[in-house]
Image 1 (tube, rainbow, N blue to C red):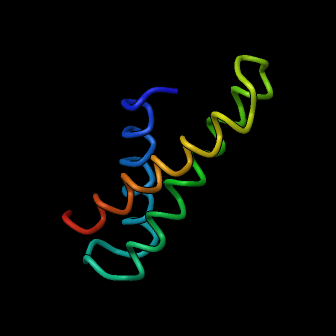
Image 2: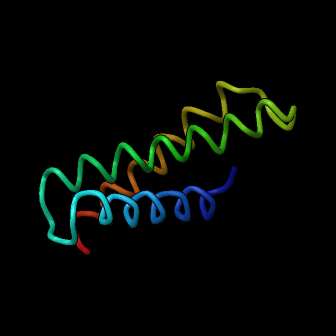
Length: 78
């Protein structure tokens, strides 16, 4: 997985967080967006690991953390 893919998943996580927690910047929305972004990153990396493209641990954890971090930052400034 690459940085642009992590950014894309993080942005998607924040957009889903907006739909769930509302458009206003708040702690609840930040937590929701971060959790969703990390979940999307883990799911995307897990899908690749199951498909046999890469080993699970070296890919899943960094992608989940990166996507969650992007969602966290985006939720604070949007």
